[in-house]
Image 1 (cartoon, helix red, strand yellow):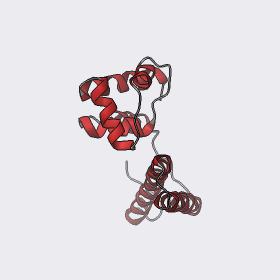
Image 2 (cartoon, one colour):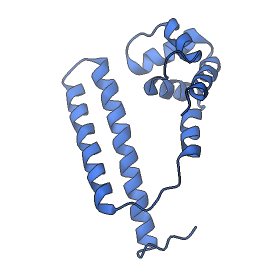
Image 3 (spheres, rainbow, N blue to C red):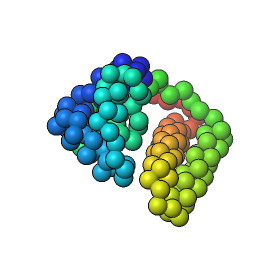
Image 4 (cartoon, rainbow, N blue to C red):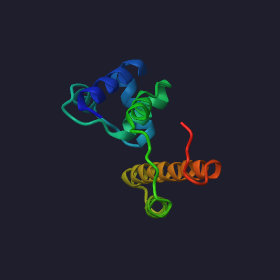
Length: 147
């Protein structure tokens, strides 16, 4: 995603949340640690990148899933993947998610919980990709996928 687009979408989410103070409160509630108004300003002006967990928090607070919608629009059409290599990617991401989840469960660190959330979302994306491949193969076992 282009930084200017991300900054503008983030700025719009902050506004929809009710301003910087409300946005900071929503993000703090989601990530478990305080954030500064200055950090929000830097992101809005494109001087810092948008933290994914912050974007998710504001999307949840507003019901405006603009980052997810943008990503869905610009994602290239999937080419047929090798089931073996995709299964390997699923296993890798799943293992990383389990490891991060266990590390978070053993600690009280907000950073560990944030990392676990990211790892689980990445694993979920790979699982969804594999499910879609399986569905395509189930309905078109010889690879002839109808458009």
